[in-house]
Image 1 (cartoon, rainbow, N blue to C red):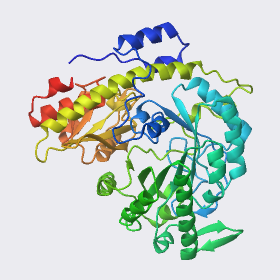
Image 2: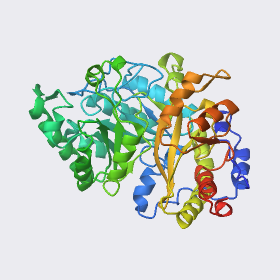
Image 3: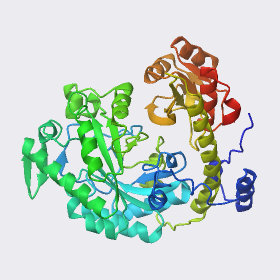
Length: 495
């Protein structure tokens, strides 16, 4: 099939050649800088699409192209969760509450400017702790005030447990913070008491069911206040088997009724090494297929987010990657000045690429819907570095993005984190066993390249792996794969 031109987004890490960027973009077949921006979902208001189209957490499509950054300026917290231990840190771990260094608002400003100058994908700045952004409010507000003056086009977000949220909604609106994430794990205080041992509210510590009741009431009030002011809300819920897994169906109903924009159900991360209550008591997290089954049951309720990576509180980069260790304070210049050129050039390139991607996706999805057979469902894992393409070597993948092709079309349904199989040019069999285990339920793996040995081991495990569709758009590749798998001649329609 004809390969569409893939513009090298990585090239923007080098000195910018604007003429080359323009020539590359135009040769891709789209000369309008706004073509990607206008391709909004049919069921979404144009104003809402404008607010989320470059936000990698609020738009699944945007997460292929745009990066987020969290600054760890809010260490104080007003609740204790059984799944949280903020004292534990591993630089290679993606888990909320984890940071390698805490920042003052001035240090955060210096770091954000340094990152913005070097990471052109950056579109969003968030404060997600490592405590609670609303409880440690003075530092949160000071950080946003400083950075908004230097980079006025960056989107500002916070993540909060919701206990102190109602006290600051008006200030959030005044600061043009129009994306807020609230972690809501229960609407029944009896269940909440199994998750939260205590909260700190109105200058005293509360325990048990009473603590959970107060937290629940404050979360619902905060969500309603945000909705009334037109601020988009994402609800994070941690799926804890045997504790709140079935109850999250009720949580989904409650938050939808109160105007939540997205509901993100995340798996419990439970490792004894982290020192959390759940980790030390043996509470397990859900399997990937258990998580998917619950998310499938929630379809038709509040709109689901399935591309979350449970980011660290100091994460930097595209979802699925973390470049935070490249930007520790000791590596940053003392004096920084913001240069918008690289980010502006990147947006021009992405607008063109997104236009082509949207057209290819629509064609592939329509073709799969038209040709779908009874029971014809295919789970596909994709190795990708971004840009919405099959462009990562199997052995270099740290995660696989998972798509489901069926009569509904081609839908992103999650991701699977893995350890690199290929380390320094050599594959480790033990690591590959872990990768195969992580690919539970997957029928086919798409990647840019794969060696004979891992391909044979995957085949023995009942998983087909192929690099036939290297550099294709993901949906185009899956559409062609679906045709080949179910014997329907639609490949030309999605080429």
